Amino acid sequence: MDQSWVASTMAAPNAAVTEMEKEDLPFLRDLWHTPEVMRYADEFPGLRHWSKASGIARAWDAYQKWRTELGSKYTQLIVRLPNGTPIGESFVAPLREGFTFGRWKKPSGVRAVMGDIKLVPAYWGRGLGTEAMRQVVRFVFIETDCELFVVPPHVSGNPAAVRVYEKAGFVPTFAKRKEGRREGGHRIMELRRTRFEELY
Ligand SMILES: CC(C)(COP(=O)(O)OP(=O)(O)OC[C@H]1O[C@@H](n2cnc3c(N)ncnc32)[C@H](O)[C@@H]1OP(=O)(O)O)[C@@H](O)C(=O)NCCC(=O)NCCS
Image (cartoon, rainbow, N blue to C red; front, side, top):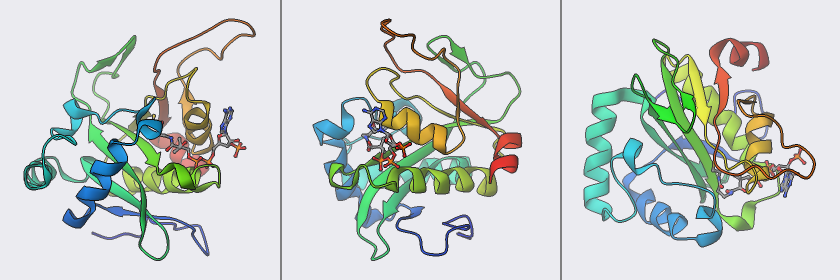
C-alpha cells in the first residue's frame, strides 16, 4: 500500500500509523482486554466481523476476507512508535445505507466510514492520540473515496477522545454540555471531505 498519507506534514513524527500485520493481533487482543482503554470504547464487532474472542487464526482469516471484499475503507490500523513498537490502534469500516447510531442516521447516498483511536494508557497525554488520528484521517480521505468520516465518542465520560477528534477536524453533531446539566452516551462527530481538504 502507498503510505504517503503517513505523517505527510510532519518532519519528525512521534507516531506512525500503518496497516495491521498478522503479528500485531496479540497486541490488539491485549489492548482490548485493558479495562482503562475499553471503559468508553468499543471493538465495533458488527462493523469489524471479528473480535478479541475470535482467536488469532480466525481473526486474521476474517480480516483478510473482509479487507479483500471491502478494500481500504475497511482497514485495521496500528499506531507505532518510530522504532516500530505498537502503542495503539484505529479501525475504519464503511457504513451501509440506512445505518443509524442513536439518533444519528447516515446521510443517504453519502459514502461514509466509521472509526476510532485507542492507545496504551502509558502513552496518553503526550499528543500521540491527536498525531495518530490525523494520520488516520489522511488515510481515509487519501486511500478511499469516503465523503464522510464519523467517530462515536462517549461525550460525558471521554473528554480526551472528544478533544482529540476536534483537533483532528471532527465536528460534534451534539449540543455542547451546558453547565450543571448531565449529558450521557456516545454521540457521532463528523468530518466531511470538503473540510478535510480545507484543513489538511
Ligand atoms: C482518546 C485517547 C486516544 C487520547 O489519546 P492522547 O494521546 O491522550 O490524546 P492527546 O494527548 O493527543 O490529546 C488529549 C487531549 O484531551 C485533553 N484532555 C485529556 N483529559 C481531559 C479531560 N478529562 N477533560 C478535558 N480534556 C481532556 C487534553 O488536554 C488534550 O487536549 P489539548 O491538547 O487541547 O490540551 C486515549 O485517551 C485513549 O486511548 N483512550 C481509551 C480509548 C478510547 O476511549 N478511545 C476513543 C474511543 S471513541
